[in-house]
Length: 445
Image 1 (cartoon, rainbow, N blue to C red):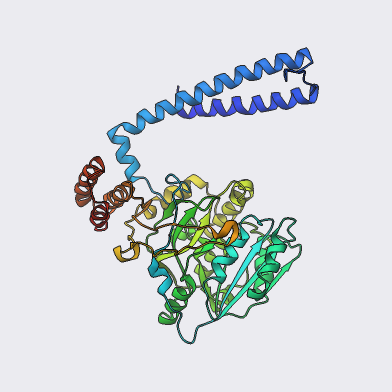
Image 2 (cartoon, rainbow, N blue to C red):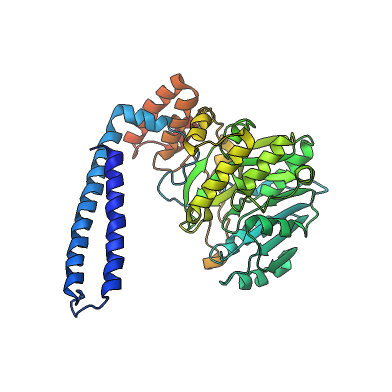
């Protein structure tokens, strides 16, 4: 049986089993002492549910065995090495994340331009304190930080009151969605440089100083963004997006710009107006980028990490997936003048996603100084991050070496083949190998 068909059938079984369970509970929810339905018809339904679950588990386990077998084949291993990582949120097992000490040594320019940051929020009390801390702990001397809350019913307001002295403005009131909240927040700012940071994302240390210095040295640049770090709900590092150089044409197919790393000049936003709250509840960031592109704004991808994107089960792109896809399709329709499927757009963007990508320099992957943590003071100021080392996963168990070979194979096929063999050898003799030298070798790619 085709693997896609088998997976689809397993999903259908799961859906119908859940529907049967709901129908059984509506029929008669009573249970006896053995936790078995009192109603005989409901009892038969339980037996059918159990059989359906057995078949579903068998199909999924069989599918997992087949997939593991397929991954072991040399041809499929090569395909895995060449597969684009942009767009993937979970790329490796969760690992602690710490920041290179060099990120803490960047000083803002003098005089420092004012940076205005807005955080739209709604019922993110679980994460917002870490977001606030990551911005305030930048210690940037000319910061206007505004939090526009949509009337949260959790602990958000209590947290905002604790940080009131460090905020330029905050309010908790009902709004018309994220774009409206962003517009309301920016109405209280006047900074030359602007950005918005969602209430579950983070800024890395030194990001504001780095952006301010870059804008000061490049007055012709209107907007900047950077590579992306991805963490899970527990602040564990699960992936990284290493982006090629900016390409305005490719931006019309897919939104590859990490929103939490995007900063722009107020003049660039003024030419095209504010975030469109009428049509884009979830895609305000892409709408803003496309309108900047149409106005001729110059955008640059910076050679470092600026922000951290958090992936979790309650993020809007997952819970409101249909709305997200509809707004994406509408923006493509506006730019290209015709309807376009998600698959077609990614197919057209595939060459860009396979382009050679720069690696962080070896100096930026230095061992972090003791106590260099980012994140919020919640949960006893636990760390949000760990070392940004290796090209991708950057772990001391050999993933750094493999990541270097994987990246090199995309960029320089000949040299990467040698790198792959050497890194495989290093991994095989892990107890004896020096992983510092392994990382040094992989840094050439």
